[in-house]
Length: 321
Image 1: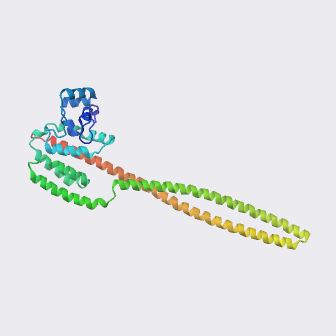
Image 2 (image 1 turned 180 degrees about the vertical axis):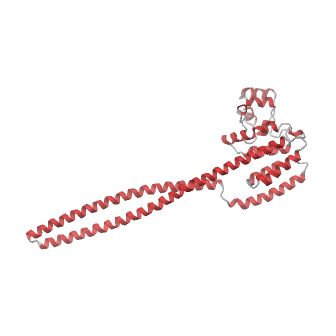
Image 3 (image 1 turned 120 degrees about the vertical axis):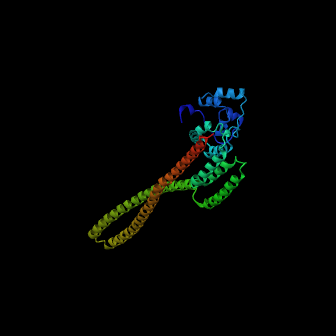
């Protein structure tokens, strides 16, 4: 968008008088304002724009008498197809800005029926496969201004009904909200996996400490056995040595059992950590795929709307009128 167009921001839907005086307009509303006055918005002169709007008592409408009914209906639907919000306003303003001047005076053209059929054909054969519901709305809009040609409206409505029936059968496919939810679930899973891995590390540290203590106890028991055996040999206390040996063996057996349990727990923790790491890795691999799918979907929608804007602009530049 060039600098001179920077200040003309097109918005979603129709607007009240107060919003219009602030320069908040949809595509067709901007077409109903005299060109010299709308030029003030392009130049950023909002105060001057407001003053002239009030002085001339300019009435703003998205159904002006100077625009071709078929083209205007299509333009209204296309304007709102961008949605709401600052980013939608930016894209709408960039893509539809050339239509503000192109649609002016098209009511005087004699090719309204041709324009409606041209836009309807594009919607049915080019845009419909890529955007079912959006194209149905635009197909209806393309012929809504042709009350003098009921046969076109009837044919269009029949095609729209069939399209919506097909759309109903396709609603079981994942929508954007489902993709977003799946991506959030994967992120939560990765977070849980990270927490579990940290908990496992803490458990392993505790088990390592227990094993170290068991090793120390084993060494102490062996030392005690050696001392007792030496004492028994020297003092001829065989009975004392035997009892000490039995007690030491019992302690060692208990320590060995505990060490075995600790080792098993450690192996189980390692296996669990490996499983969680695998899940986290899968989540990390899936997230970029989901993001790429969403980005592609959004890019396709933007390109589709640009094609629609270009097609409408094309009908306004046909020779012969």
